[in-house]
Length: 255
Ligand code: URA
Image (cartoon, rainbow, N blue to C red; front, top):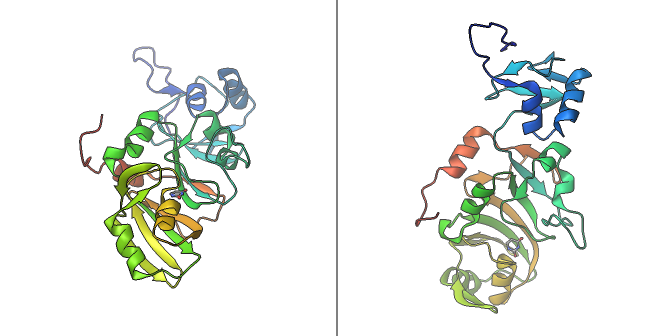
């Protein structure tokens, strides 16, 4: 574990523990000093009460009140969104998905990367990196999103064909089409969409004569919803998942 640098001949290396805590959303500088000074912070399992102690933040793990946190320059997490939560910061009818996240993530200002409507469940990515949100939701980037829908009426071959060929939605003259579409059961289908238009999956399925009863997002780009993550729970995106999500080349130039 890196230790506090006292050698006068060398400049100190690393970032103070207080600064690291502050960068990770643990409150004001004063509050971070207080957490450290009262012995509530450990680094790699060892309590550190000196808020000036220097550490290399990259790859560091800290514990605050016994909860382990990876130190990350960018917060990027995956939430298994339940029904009955709004993606807005200022929800109107239901609680916000933000209420499912711990305070440090909220203080870091994480925001959903593309919204799900309140009744839709499944994979929601959130980050505090505004330019990343812009990149991954930019229409030109065509990030594929996989949905599973339970429909009110049986899924018919002509409905799948129309979804693939493209349908015109009421408020938009440009047809939108599914990149892929498959029947999964009598009343279930999968749908891959490149855009993120308002209620897009529900409106497309309505446009081909069916009706969505349940909608679940199963994948966003290269990230898939883990089978073992219960609804309402979140986890960090691993660095490998992050690299894969961000690295695919753009379909067209995106600023
Ligand atoms: N399409 C919808 O209709 N709702 C969502 O939440 C996402 C895609």
